[in-house]
Length: 201
Image (cartoon, rainbow, N blue to C red):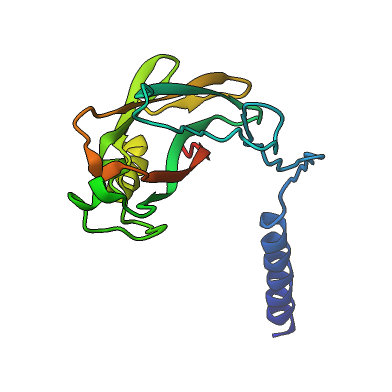
């Protein structure tokens, strides 16, 4: 009986040893050091050093032989990432600025200054070119100007400025010769915004 018990204990010890032997394994380890995440830059320069004020677009005395013109802005991506370029007409307001006698005969909105009452924008068409290629055009009413901002996103292929790349943005304007006394003394104010949006692939 003792022999049998010793044999069972021996078998148990050998079995336990065999279990631990089968669980042994080799390992190796390597370490990759100095790993970093870095954020690229996207910076649009318009007509000069970053942050400088953009020269305003001022047209006066329309109807005295001045019925068209243009302005060119040089835009450049000074960042390290490519970006999709667009421009927008913001805060477009047509002012009435009162009515003289000839205007009163055809125009019943004679507020002074009369924001959003003016008719000038219905006769001023703007066309945008990038490096001489026509991209977007619109009249300068408040409603049309809000739509022009969406047209940039539908340009195919989109206008991409790679790092260090620059382009000429030209805005050409023309006054429709069908205007009459309703635009006398009217004025048109607007802001130009230039945008560079990161490309997400």
